[in-house]
Image (cartoon, rainbow, N blue to C red; front, side):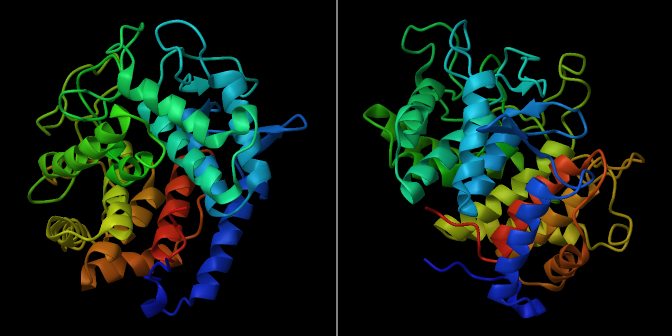
Length: 375
């Protein structure tokens, strides 16, 4: 399948888009100290550093693996995967079968909790790796590893084992963490769940299909009708999740860092599995909000989901620009065009906070240039 190059109307050829993807990958993995956040470890391992927090997280490790399989870089993929399996994987306790969401860069676990967005990307990256490169032995039997993680995510606790599943069996929703009964709208990846079914077995296969349909409906609940924004965390009815401020380090009911991924995920789902009327409407209101006169040149803020602008600046402005540009997948209008142009004019971020911004930057660039592929 040949994916559309949404940059073509802005003068970026398919060849130029592919070249830029290679440049972004090389910068993230092998650039200067102010640019890269991939580090090799020993002869056959490596990790992605969250440069703002100076740790390695399952989010970044699994993102890095997805970047590698998209760019056909098996050596780096295997380095990240072996580091993950060596240091992050938990083989005992209530989270047995999951990965510790944060480790020090020497591999020591900072937490024995697990964050589902990491597991979700691990499973998808491993499926693509098996499809693209074939399955090997042991931990490099990519499909077998993906199948085992997925089975645990769906069935843990329900099958009598210790701990809890990452998916809520009744609703089909991915949880914020397995132990909590609320969600994170940016964790919902129906385009992944559709593809999980290709390697899942038995009842897991049907559950993946259920979860995909449920997540597309959940987005409709979680995205504000006026702005298109979701909160970082949300209850199962879609309303922003309030409370737990001390437990989770402050507010998460607003449109802030995690929430920028929601529009990106809607765009990826639309490219891979078809653009719905709802997604078109979501792109229209989302892009239009950021082009209102009061926002178009004063957009770098934290917002309530209803669009109320707060005084505080956002922590990840480059991520906002990149994900706003993804509305160009959903709708063609002056508002989305403006953000695509801004994205093309925006360099990768440097400095301590570059990790999250540049991860989203790369995914958005791959998508818009027609290089974010199903394998």
